[in-house]
Image (tube, rainbow, N blue to C red):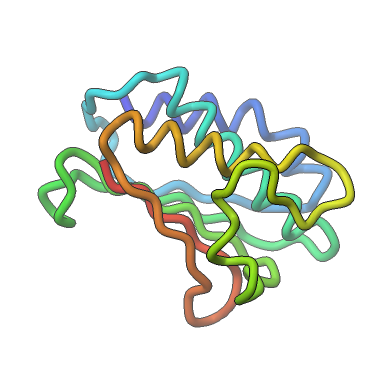
Length: 143
């Protein structure tokens, strides 16, 4: 089930991914049932993918989405990671990115990541953003 949520989100984001010269890969079990609202999770993942594409728009790059069953990673059902090869999240911004109406962009409302955060919370989960070694930004959801 979860693999279908990812496939739909990527399909919706593919025009932006193609325009930004972003290549993507998905890694996870072929079938992994989870108890989530599929439309809400699809929207959350779509927001993360589109943000990643924007972060890599200037030079392209790789987007990695990987997921695993929760019992393997101290989560109830699921661990989902979205990692891009962009410039990363500036230190002063990192603690504010989930705040409603906070944005560093010239366009947009600043609601995308706040919406993602609310969706994860509605599933009694957590989301963590960081800049992993090697560059880029990484968002990890545990539900």
